[in-house]
Amino acid sequence: MKNTINLLKTAECLCCHPLVSRRHFIKSFFPGALAFTILQSAEPARAEIHQAKTLVLSCIDFRFLTAERNFLRIKNLRDEYDWTALAGASLAVTGFPHLYDAEAFWDQLDLSYRLHHINKVIVLDHQDCGAYAIMIDPNLSKDPERELQVHTDYLNRAYWSIRNRYPDIKVELYFAPLNKAEFQTVLPSFENHKFSEVKV
Image 1 (cartoon, rainbow, N blue to C red):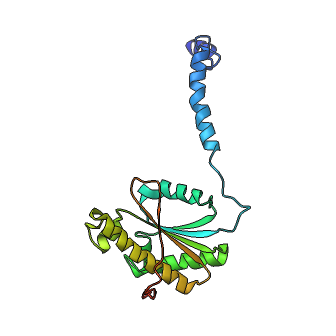
Image 2 (tube, rainbow, N blue to C red; image 1 turned 180 degrees about the horizontal axis):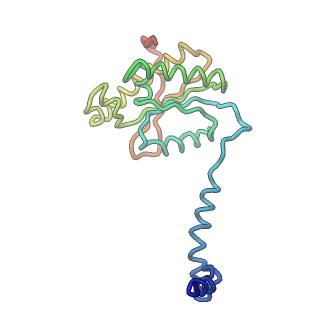
Image 3 (tube, helix red, strand yellow; image 1 turned 180 degrees about the vertical axis):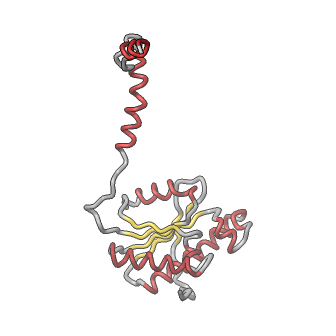
């Protein structure tokens, strides 16, 4: 019992212990302060803004998330958009890989339109898309010119499907190349624009 009491008498906190230097204390303090700062920088949901400007449809590919967010920030959307991600983006509107994917997109668009009063849809396709490789051609990305043409075709199908259902909504189409900061604008084709829409 006597030994225990002696141990308790000599126990002190690390910051007050005479053997702990100021430098050691600062080294111990700095990582905690840094972690606290990072945790404090997380932003809560924004209750004051309840209207989005746009619905963004993108692919699920994680390689493009940062580039897509930067692109949307450059377009002055600054988190004022609803975001739906489906494999293949424009391809999903045609019902790939299942009709349920097209149905999910239309449900999200309808909710975004009715609840958040969006006035625009932005569709973001990208180079080297696995969904396009499965649906169209496993070697599609090896021919960049053909790849862009195929994406342009499906982006146009998405454009006219959306415009047929929501004529008052603007639709913008983009193609994101790998390893480049700029997204290519894909202009809608006004020739033969009556693409057959997948009914869900």
